[in-house]
Every structure is written in C-alpha cells, then in structure tokens.
Length: 153
Picture 1 (cartoon, rainbow, N blue to C red):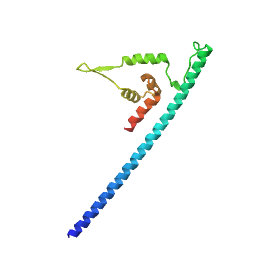
Picture 2: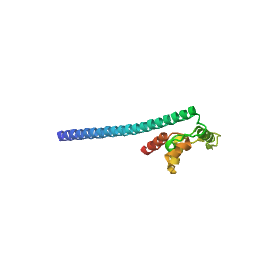
Picture 3: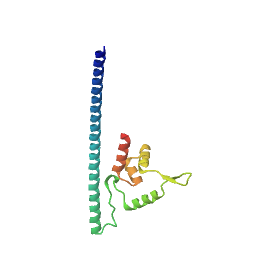
Picture 4: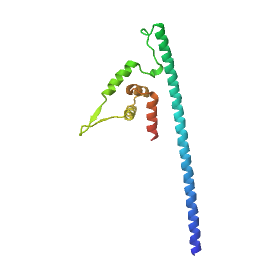
C-alpha cells in the first residue's frame, strides 16, 4: 500500500512540474509579445518624430531663405497640418500655463495637474490630438504616446 502512495506522489509531482513548466513558457511567450509590440510602437513613433523633424528643417530653411531675400516681414511660413506653433503662440501658451489651475488645500499647499492628466482629460472630452498638443504646448507624438500607454494599462 505504501508503494502505491509513493507512485501516486511521484505522479502528482511530475504533473505539477509539467504544469509549472507550461505556465513558465506561456509567461515567456507573453513577455516576448509585449516586447515586440512595444518595439514596433516605439519604431513607429521614432519614424513620426523623424518626419516631423524633416518638416521642421524644411520650414526653417524656407524661413531663412525668406529672411535672406528680405521678404520675411511680408510673408508667413505655414506648416503642414499645424504641426508646429509660432514663437508668439508659444509665449502666449507659456503665460497661460503660468496661471494653470492650482487647487488649494487646507494646509496652504497647492496641487497642479500633470501633463498626463490634462492630456487624458482632453482626450476623454473628444479633443483631437493636434488640438491637445497645441493647447498644452507639447508635441503630437508625446500626446499620442501618453494616450497609447494609458490604453495599454
């Protein structure tokens, strides 16, 4: 009878080890899939950033050409799809953020909402990514990254 229980014990141990091994393999596969997905996401964002940088270089080159020809005061450089904000707009938005809503607490401390929470709130309200980037004075890629990472959570 004792031999029977020892054989059953070895069988249960073998099944347990096999189950642990299968679970471990699934976990490793899941981690690899997540790494591949994150790599692809980062690669696509790097490509977008490179494209935006190329567009910015073209705009700056056009602006310098206009300044050299003496027509800078008469013409404005427009950027495709409102990717970039002019210097005056940046200054206005900086002044707006200096007066960002601050929530007073009972001890006299103040709390300011983070960029991530403002992005997610505006996105939840249905504001397009371009508009969020303009309102918060940050890049479209940064906004879309914040939204993508929040969806991943």
